[in-house]
Length: 268
Length: 264
Image (cartoon, rainbow over all chains, first blue to last red; front, side):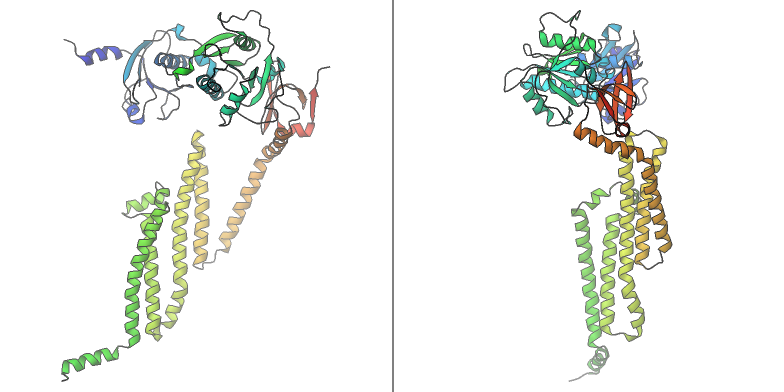
């Protein structure tokens, strides 16, 4: 005769590490006596010793866990073959699920790398993601819009692109994450061209026509010129491209010419 | 009919002058006024948020250990002061000549003592609060020695408070003021020395950001460093060339000038 807690015991037996996803203080304290506890979340609110930062609040729990484990792998907290118990919240704010995950090298999708090992600040990249997701959700006056953000390595990007029009950000000091930026970018996204954003988040230019060599850039079929330009510029430079598709409304991120991440704005 | 008892009473009250009666009345009124002042003070302190603001400071914690609180100490001080003023008034009215000299000094000294005490209490609380605020600000900096800075700020405030309090009650504080002056001067000189380069770079950075003689993506040579501008901020300009990133302080931009490389 097995009881429910026996089943739960089986889930958490012999785990190499425990990952707490955005725990509250008192819940985290309960894990005081357990070894290899890591906190995964947007901010280290509980002063945990080991902490993996989540730059975007992944709505999908699979993505969240995968990102957390990828980050932990990069930090050397866990390795291939380790078994991790993930505790997090699915419906309410309190912890309400436990998941047993085996760490696998194939989980390394480069998403974590996209944020932490890019030239640009991780905060800048997640800010741009937020702007792109917001733009995708709301669109321009209800109509879907497309946008292309090239983040980081701005000097090189500027030299590999041409202005399409007068640069509205000339002699301005606007940074992504400033409250006014969402409105400005929404307006400027009506016109064609890419936004160029520097490592520290300064918006260098809008309306840039990117001129990378698109040769040998391998992006999925069905994506248009905007994605091609975004993907190609990341191969020529150390920049990261974040593209909001006008046709299917998804936000995609490219690095080193490869598609790394695909997010649906409606899910966030 | 006039009885012997009434006679005795009359004689007793007759010796007590009207002034004395007035004085007793003033003292009684003083007690009531003191209670009123205490009530008003404590409510005022509560209303303007003093109680919440000073919560958690070490002075507040110490007073709590003694079963009181900072607000209550200030309330009691104000009450005691009111009462003393009333007593003094009463003594003057009662015309007790023998005490003139004594009360004259006290009348001058008491308000000062009261002010000194209040300054001291406020100083201690503000010093604690400053320490808390500064350490909060520096919490992100994980350095053991950083704990010295909040402490320094706390004792600076405390020193000034003690100085004011002492000067209120007429203690010679000239030496201490000289000490304070020397301390302030040292602080200013050291800060100026330490931030000389930062200030120079900062002012140059303001010029660069306002006029943008070069911007991100331009090919420039600054102080012998040649490359593409990647970032311009208040203090430094980042120039990159062939995988090398030069971080050039903006000071050199104005000192050495800029060469902008334009395509032929």
